Length: 380
Image 1 (cartoon, rainbow, N blue to C red):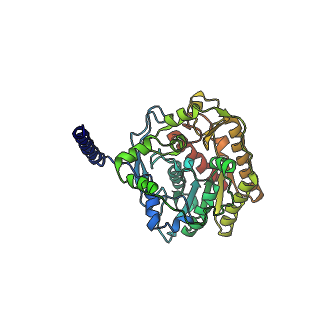
Image 2: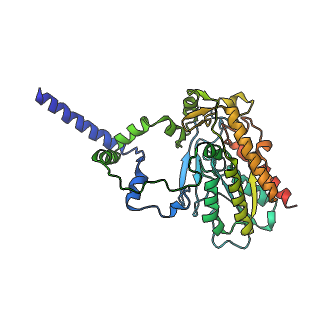
Image 3: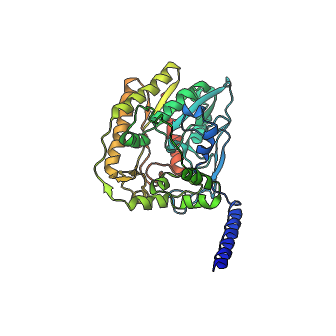
């Protein structure tokens, strides 16, 4: 019997080794890669801008079948980050005298992950302004959007990165990610909550981290990760149907956490102050969200109503977005800052959006064209 067990163990070990070798030809990332690197090389620069893209990043994406507005779109799309970490053309420093430089700051609605470089709304805006010889210069629009970024990230990006790159104009497209932040963030002042005492790391934890050097444990991790992790994961091929299914399986919570809009208002004023002190034109864009849409197709693609593991009432979440948009408008009026009212300009239909708040290719086209008209009107 012992010989049989030993034989089976050897066969199992050989099979595991062979499977591991094959899987290395189709690798998946180590979920603890950043943590392992930072054990020896702490990310000193990233403490100032927590959310950013690495320069010269090139990715290709694809969308799932049936995604609204992508039915006849490109099979694969290019997502390219330039030499300074922004989506757009190569950035030259110091700024050429004949360039008019615009930065668009925001979250995933600015980033437009699954829309090709040539069709993203910042590129449409750039092309439109150049056709009309805006400011009698060559206009360059750089996209600093990053999925999940809220107004705290926008302040960090503006003050620590963009302000040094000689912008003439900045567009801040913000709102929806601050709904989550204001509802669920219990540390809005960003105190260091990490305990100072030394933590003993046991053999079990170290062995577990070591296992993720291999492809089989990595795949097991991604197969059994939590529902909330799955909702927040961005994949090379879009997985919105999975996110919708997970959200719809949860009960609806009608009682939403209280929200301190004063925190958001102060940060809006901070952005205004930074731009004003540096003689930079500023435009705010309100957030368009479809939680109150009458478009049945769009309603069936809502997944972002799940926040922090809880599915909230969509209509009540919409009220919070509307309140944030009102704060953006009211604070801007006080300081004579123009506001592009995206939520009233872009119709909340599947012609332009494919889920809770993200533009499809037609939506990117409309956003870019409408914003260009707005900007040119301001300067007449």
